[in-house]
Image 1 (cartoon, rainbow, N blue to C red):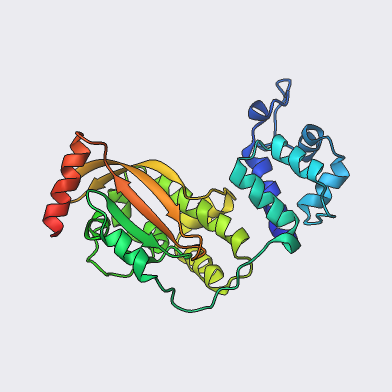
Image 2: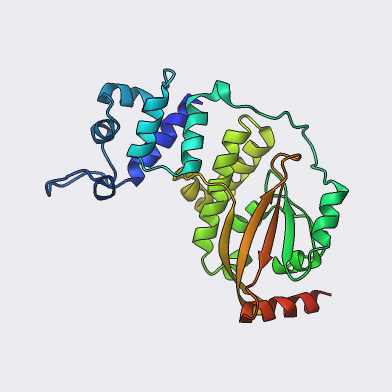
Length: 273
């Protein structure tokens, strides 16, 4: 993963401005908006030569102190620090052996999701495939119950998603950041590489946000949608991973009681019945 390590460090260096990093510029003109290599080295307390070799993909068994120093210098999030460690020490990544081919759902998980009331719920696979959900979950994405799609592909390749998500750019960035996180969980996975390759070829927007090297796990957020049937929705999105089925997760979308969004969610449920 040496090349990936170098790409990640260069992207983080380009994204951190001198002002954000606390590096004085003394009013001098700069050729690039991000930090220079010597500035990163100074912030991390390592030599410029050593840091340069890291950007060239030579991890040289980075110590815990160097990893921590780089994380602090780049102001990395917890997810980004995990990703950095995986890139620097690929031999320590514990990869669960997964059979290739269609993913399968446990009947108990399907029953759990289909029994959810008042909230939309969907089950996503390790490659963002929509594997299942309740009726309201499918309706939220404008799909028929049981319809199989890949939500990463629809996000970047289906123009309707830009209408569904008023903050499409933010959500698209989150999808790319999750896929970047997945590359650390599933290094050398051919199906994941195929998905990323297809999006890179077909979507200039994906290529742009993928190149930013952002990393984040799917957890929770407030999701705003502009649904074509019921109008604006503000929903609380919660994600629950299934530890016995690595990569699979259930996503719940619910509205605060008494809000317009709660009323519109109930209307959508009735329209989809």
